[in-house]
Amino acid sequence: MINLIPPTGHRAVHKEYLIRVAATYGFLFSAVFILLTIALIPTYVLVQAQMHAFDMEAPVEGEGGDIEIVEEDMVRTEAILTELRKVPNTPQMSVLIREIESAANRGISFRNFSLQSDPKALTPIVVQGTASRREDLVALKQAIEAHELFASAEVPLADLAKEREVPFTITITLAESH
Image (tube, rainbow, N blue to C red; front, top):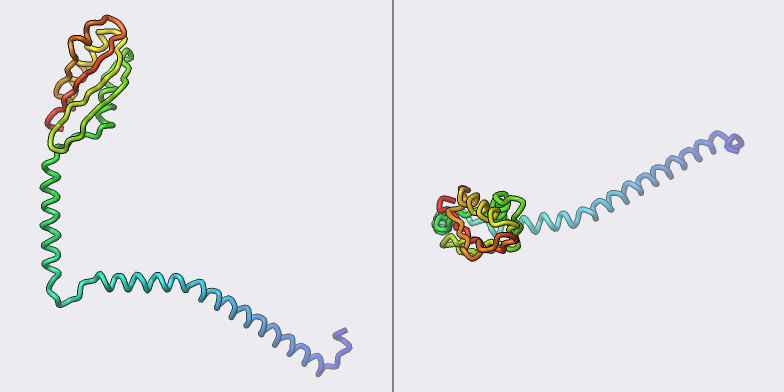
């Protein structure tokens, strides 16, 4: 059908085709540009808000208050460090429980671990459980006393009265160096 159009008409149709293609691509490019601009508006707003917040926080130069602020922060930091040095360096409860359980042999089953948290003093750990034999309980006491985390382990004499299936309560004192 295009062969039936005279050469001048063929040029006009080709020119019109190129104009339409260019207009379509121009429209698509403009639409993509507008969509990307709209998509960047939240980023622009966020960056502007952060810059405004930073400007509000930044001290104004020339006021001379920077040195005083830093000195106040250093004094507060020293006070916090002093308080932290007063707190005894005790291991975490999970570490203590793991060490007590590792000291026990198969004849020991634990029912309860109790540790009162006092930042100014070392408090004893109270452990309750059942030993299948009295010898297992004595071995647990000796293993705990031999451990470096613990200073002593006390078992009431009444807990050692039974020969088998011995319910016990053992009081463990933490070592001072830990």
